[in-house]
Length: 148
Image (cartoon, rainbow, N blue to C red):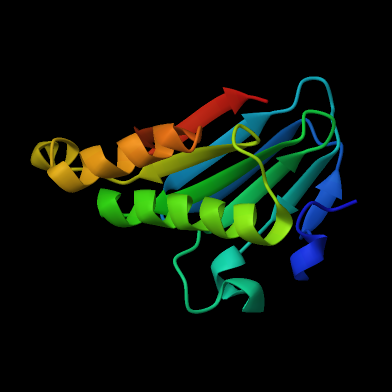
């Protein structure tokens, strides 16, 4: 069963794929599913009626069996906005589908980021809030490749 079905969001793809990849404007997230677990891919979440009028990630990936939801944002250079989108999506899913702390991971692939932005009080606050929510967020430039 799709983790987001309670809010009317059906997966774009569900299969036991070995490689899952999302790409936007030369930014790429790739997950290697070596154990061929059932994967549910959600594309263009920000365009879905359940997420209108709020900050939301572009993509999500649910790993059945591990019960892990990856919230994926591919962003140009606005790191603050990317963190806000991941955090707001997580909070909305906590409220609407009872997603538990520790059951989600945030992934941000950013085109470029200015060094001062990494040290800004706003970014520090957002990172701290993610940690408080037990939301593990990985942020890298251009691409993330990981095993799931």
